[in-house]
Picture 1 (cartoon, one colour):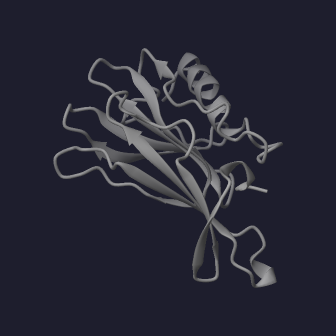
Picture 2: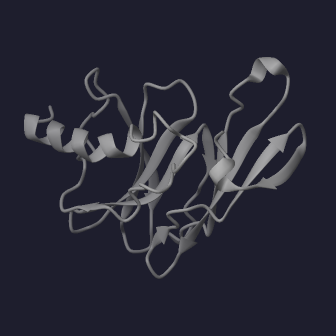
Picture 3: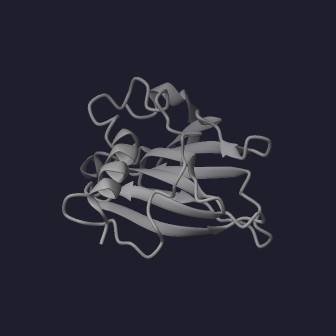
Length: 177
C-alpha cells in the first residue's frame, strides 16, 4: 500500500510529465521536458503498484545498464493512444532521474544492449489521428543519447512524417499539428 505522502510525491512528480501538454500540443511539447529532473528517492518501489483509479500510471521495467542502474517506463494509462511516455533511471543511491521524454508516443523502439549500453538513437511513433480518412500521417521522432550527460536530448534530432510507405523530413515544431 502506498502511503499518502508517497501518493502526493508521485502525483506531483508525474503531473508535470503527463498532463502539461494536453491543451496545446503543437507549440512547445518539448520546451518543458522533464529530462534531467531528479528526485532523491525512487518514485515507487518496484514491488508497489501505482496503477490505481486515482493515479492511473503504468510502470514497466525497461532494463539495467552496466552501472547497475535500473530503467522504468512510466505513462498515464488513461489515454487510449499517443500517450506521453517517460523513461526514468533509478540509481543504486535510491534516486530517480528522467532520462527520456516521448510526448504523444503510441509506440517506440528502445532496447538496452547486452552489456548495459543505452541505444544511441530512440524512435518514437505516433499513430495517425484521423485513420478514417485513409491517409497515413504517422509521425516518427528521433532522440539521441548523450554519453556524457547520460540523458537523451531534450529536443529530438529529427522528425519524419510517414505518408503511405514514404518517410519525409518535417520540422519537429510542426510534428503534432
